[in-house]
Length: 392
Image (tube, rainbow, N blue to C red; front, side, top):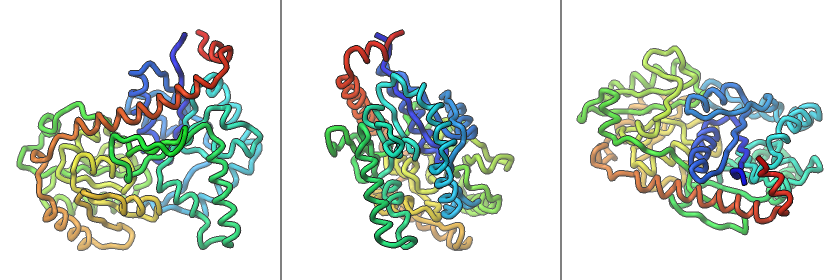
């Protein structure tokens, strides 16, 4: 029998979706599971390639729109998503491209494309297709609340009910949440689980990482990660100026800052650098907050108009966090947040306990959850179907 196979559709609008696909391809690969990754833009494919993960690109059909400060452009996003979902030509084109990849897969992980959520509305069976919806707790909450205050209450309620109904028709769900202790698999149903946000493995000790970067033991190191939607040169300059004034060496990463001196577009070892740092600066997505929590790194959250990220921050406990809102706050506010972080940090980078064991437990929980779903899928398929699916 050939290897078990998962098709993983990861939207490229948030790099966290892509990082999850990359990590799970590695982790499940060690369990003998082949993971074929599909994403939604050439830029997303280049990000995955920089990490070492090959992928196929689904022809761009829908996308989320942000401004140069990563604020969500709601009306433009709604227009593009609705145009996609109401276009039979686009829908059928994407289905034609996806179905050969889905055929024979033991599991299809949807992180987090509207087409596979809407599959039952197209007369297709998401359960028989072995689709598992993977989403952040607060991302799903923001999705459900999208019409709040912008549509009649009845319309909003009907939208929420339909979304939950569509989700329930899938083979399973995987929700990641900062409410879950890392390493725990919370069972919400027969094939519904909750996990803590996954973070990359740490293969180098902090001392070795700092040595590689040429940063001394007593120097302060700040890791800055700006996702691709941060494209404003003024923000890059602002962060550089404030951090250097506080005595930090910068390791700055951002696809939207390409060409800016001292910045790099990609950093395959970003988590290791963050774990060796005195400060992590990023928008408060699940991935970066999960790293701050596990690594114990003080965190400066760059807050924008993304409701799920604001909710993420309310769930982060036990981590030194301050916020800065680039669109509305000035340089004094930025400096004030940095000073508060320094005063609140009781440990330097070399005094923090090693997070390696915690990361390993976290990875084991994700492997346990996904292999459990694969096993359930294989067990429910007719024997003849299994033989055809795994024929070499």
